[in-house]
Image 1 (cartoon, helix red, strand yellow):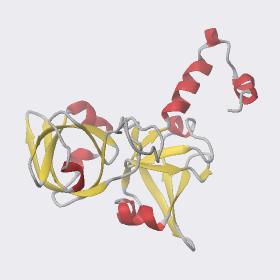
Image 2 (cartoon, rainbow, N blue to C red):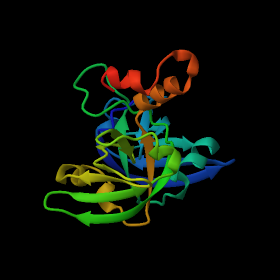
Image 3 (cartoon, rainbow, N blue to C red):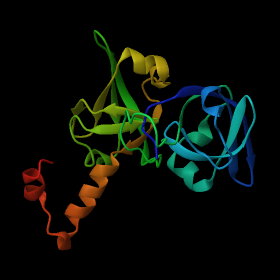
Image 4 (spheres, rainbow, N blue to C red):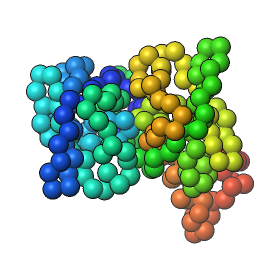
Length: 210
């Protein structure tokens, strides 16, 4: 489980492939302080397992199932990535509940500058659009963000200066891919509502404040 608050930007040091498994070695500093073999690390929003580490870097493996749902197999050496360790039982919870299970790879269709932020428009599939609500939470490349405008086929996010400074999203260009994970809580609500045996419906959820 993650929060979507990026702790550090790492750099891909080495990429190797063995028997259809892609091994990524990532240079970083902060998240190495309490790392262990088997730890879960969010790399651009995808939950991966630490298989090796030293004082300067750590390694994770991208298996076929993860490769098919992400763009991690298209990363190049020296590419920067967003990194976050799994949630700690201590400290403040600043983002939202993020599983690190990427729903799909979407495309950036437009980038606009505003007075104090950068507006990025992203086009996912219709299925994911239906799992979003205006002002709801969304994870983009592992970053917890707010859906500022929801359209029929696209949605907008605003990147404030701090987000542009502390994540790789400021490097993105029109046409670039991004990992999308919709809000886990919305998925559970959607599942319950679609189950006719539950007795819940849209009207009841509105009455409860949803």
